[in-house]
View 1 (cartoon, chains in turn cyan, green):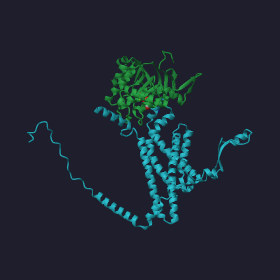
View 2 (cartoon, chains in turn blue, brown):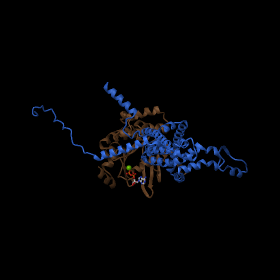
View 3 (cartoon, rainbow over the protein chains, first blue to last red):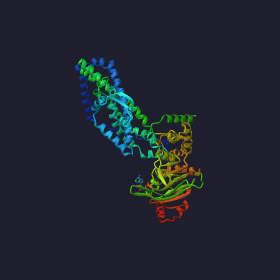
View 4 (cartoon, rainbow over the protein chains, first blue to last red):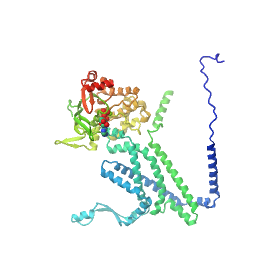
Length: 320
Length: 257
Ligand SMILES: Nc1ncnc2c1ncn2[C@@H]1O[C@H](COP(=O)(O)OP(=O)(O)O)[C@@H](O)[C@H]1O
Ligand SMILES: [Mg+2]
């Protein structure tokens, strides 16, 4: 047979391997154990009367709870945005060649990382007691005016301390001050991860230090900064429940707990709280995913929109 | 400045120390406008440091360095030197293009964005104009098909050609090359040298640190041999390579040729 076949035919490709696969009995045992445990857990959830699922569902979407979720989300986003801005400023200061500037940033970070958030929040809530009013003006103005033989002061804007340091603002202030310290370290690590050759290339093109930082270094540092910032954001979401120390009573956890204590249905509302935080942090994870994609441009092998357009144009050109 | 005989680069007794270590020990060198000067020498002899001094990426510790008649990094008034501000140093660098051994393209920007960045951000050129000019430059270095690729989608030779286009976009009057082909696979060296040869023929003033003796002989107007922080020998490339006068030049060339 083979001898009669024409010369041009190549030898038949080797037939695919059919071997007996290695068995993994351990995997089957583990699967069985987990299945049993999961079944027990679901059974407990369904049959144990403390969960009161109907009650929970009826009460976890009341207007007050929805407002609480809104407050929690807004607080998280605001505290993170301002915290990141503060962190960038501190990180750039920390890397400054001026020892006073970098020392100031170091001291700030050292101080605010040491303080538990709940303690800081409590302190911020009571800043109104330190001075009755907070005024904007020229420092040491009264001493200065006295020295010049004049009376009066040089202040432009006065605010009632008890008004600014109440509720939402006090809570936001505390969270931002604390977050800035953590973000500073994250941003610094990001900045330092960028190849120094990048700054040199930017400088050689005539870009100033500030412009090189904004246009070249920070966008590349974002790749390193974003994943830990995602962690920080989720931690922040959870830490808004510490606002009870201010107190900010419109916040999510407070509202759910209030329903629980009022109705003596503690466990259902605690479970409702868990589910709410799960849902909100999942939402934030989606945001993180898109941010990561945005700042990984030029680092993966994904085709960009412009490249796809160019390739399609070429392919159409070729088929014509 | 309008003096035709004024050199593009003039170095007089340039010294540079890092801490206790003196890396440049008094460099005297003139580069005339339109000239291509190639610099060779053993590793660690201070070639890169000298190039970096020319655009003030390093500050010289003694001596004087002028580019286009301007003292680099300082202003001289009443016999005293005043350090220039960050902004003024940046302004000086705009006239000097630099190409690095490791390309140093901006990885988060496409080839075209790399080329447009400095004109738009530094010179305030309108985006549409910068784009048109950028595409022209990328065509000139043979990368018309690659304008929308990110650096990590390009070969080393292509990346280096983008880097050259990026430097040219600022319309410099002087180009510095620090071993532009040393990080490339051998088969990619030629395409970069071709672009540089074209640039030299167009009349660009160039200072090229290189190990490509063929390029130095063929394109260079002048060859500088540096060793241990000093200029050991300067001359016509053919002459220096064919009949080196100095024993250290001979020793070096016998190793690389
Ligand atoms: N930033 C720096 N700090 C300390 N030493 C340096 C620095 N840059 C270069 N050097 C030293 O200066 C010498 C010359 O370096 P370089 O100019 O890079 O040489 P070449 O480019 O000729 O190989 C080397 O010994 C190197 O270690
Ligand atoms: Mg070098």
